[in-house]
Structures are given as structure tokens and as C-alpha cells.
Image 1 (tube, protein in one colour):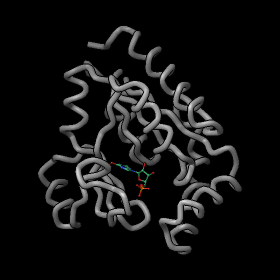
Image 2 (cartoon, helix red, strand yellow):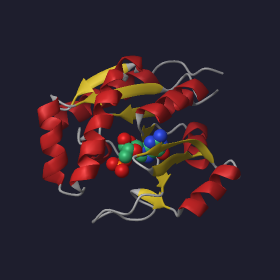
Image 3 (cartoon, rainbow, N blue to C red):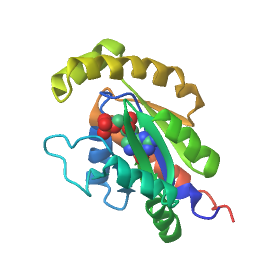
Length: 192
Ligand code: 5GP
């Protein structure tokens, strides 16, 4: 489909710092945008509805799903997360490079639906560092941290399916590596 090359999927285990890396990238390169997903999880301190996520109730999410407004979704640690169709289609039509920060299952679904998209996996420097970052963030209870750590191991095991791999050791370097991947891809001819 025309415009698929403008879609960039970024995944990485919770605590890997992918959101910080993507925020850095968007700050330095305002021509690149990020999709705002819908979720049923509770808002964290500092998050803004409509900016970080569209925070929906379970009923609202299920209605959006039934009406076909969500292009892929998953249940992650007992909450729904989904990409809005309007977000993906607008960027493809307007030829604006866009990043979807989503987990591995969603990434696989997007790649199947839009084979011209590019999937990028952000690796933590190591598992110890990942655990440290999750705890240091202090936003989740111990039980959730344990769930996210277990999920991280499964996600890393599936990272081989991604087109590109970067390590988040130094945020700025990692952001620029992703930027190079984007620049290279959008310079390629578009599929019809
Ligand atoms: P968090 O609760 O930390 O914001 O997000 C949990 C996980 O859900 C992260 O791996 C994040 O990338 C993923 N996620 C966020 N939005 C979406 C989405 O629209 N679809 C899918 N499949 N995963 C998402």
C-alpha cells in the first residue's frame, strides 16, 4: 500500500527506555511524529489524555474495536492497548514519517498488514539494567514489575523477527541510530 514506508514500529521491553529515546528523537526531528494509542490502563502521574494515550474505559475500547476504528490491539498485563486506524492512515496519506511504540504482538500484526513498514527493536544494555530502570521509575507495584520482567524475557526472545535492532545504552546515540534508519528508508522508492 502506498505510504507504508512512512510507518516505523518501535518495540522494546518495559523499562528499556524506548519512550525516552523516541521523545528525544521527536524533539530533535520535529518532522517525525508518533501515533497516540488507545489504552484502558490507568493514567500515570504526568501523563496527559490525548497526548500520551487516549485513555478509554473497557466499554469505550470495545466499542471502538467493534466499529473497526482500531487497526491492531493487544491485552498487555491485563489492559487493552490499540492503534487507531485514523492515526496510521493519516500519516501514510500525508507522507509523514510516524513511529508506533507498541509491543511485539502488535508489531507483528502491523508488519503483516503493512509489509512496507519497518520494525525496530530497542534492546536494554542488559537484564540487570532493565530491572533497575523499572524499579527506579517507581511507577509500578512490585507485582506489576515482576509481570513486566517476565514479559520482557518473552519479548527479547522474539526480537529476531524485527528488521532493525538498536541498543539503548546512551539515549542520544540510540535516538540518532533510529533517525538514520528512518532517513534511509524514506529515501527508498515508495511501493504503489
Ligand atoms: P505502558 O503501559 O508502559 O505505557 O505500555 C505497555 C506496552 O504496551 C508497551 O510495550 C507499549 O509499547 C505497548 N503499547 C502501547 N500502545 C500500544 C498499541 O497501540 N498497541 C500495542 N500492540 N501495544 C501498545
